[in-house]
Length: 267
Image (cartoon, rainbow, N blue to C red; front, side):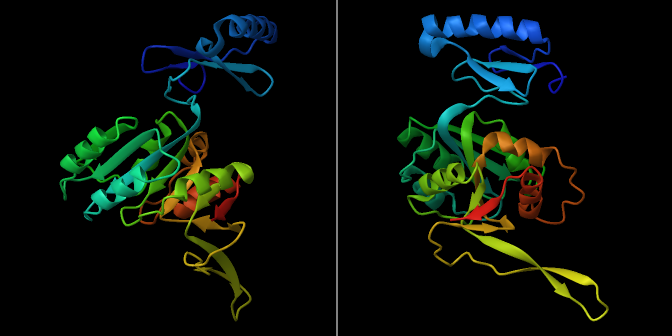
């Protein structure tokens, strides 16, 4: 199983988790020596707690608890019924922090974005471009599953009506790093608790702050419409039981991360 033993990468490379302390020390020593001689070609060494080692080859992405390429960001665009893909692709191309990967996730074939995606790919050869079309509507959640399979350190998932300014990715990634790998968005809400006549509490969403300019950012309950976070943190969201698909994923994502001490912030 991927979670207990290892997993296969795109090129058949096995990611192994070793639980024997003595073997761990010996293997780590060998890898450190290899690093001195191989330099950039040496495997990345990731320590898990006190007893685990994972090996990631440079540039490889792995299914499961994936290894990532440091300092990179991937963008996920959503396509359903709106036809905003061209202006969104233009916004991606104009980012001051250029994404290394772009994934277009399309639910059902209500609009044709094939040529727009192909044109972006031709004009931006440095970006790895993928287009996933599903005949089944995976609603809000499928795009986050696919985002987890990317190989970038950070991912930024956009709704289909979002056109960020040119500094959005750079500012979001920098803010996330500054605040302990926080979940970052440009639109946010608090959840207020209001006392009722019978003494019970009524939980109500309120205090939307998407149009405010907040110097230094702001800690909030959850963000929506555009989410930037460390890709590896999506495993917390994917590991939470989804009790209903009748609502959006924004509260669920923020809740799963806050359970692990990762806050949501607006920039």
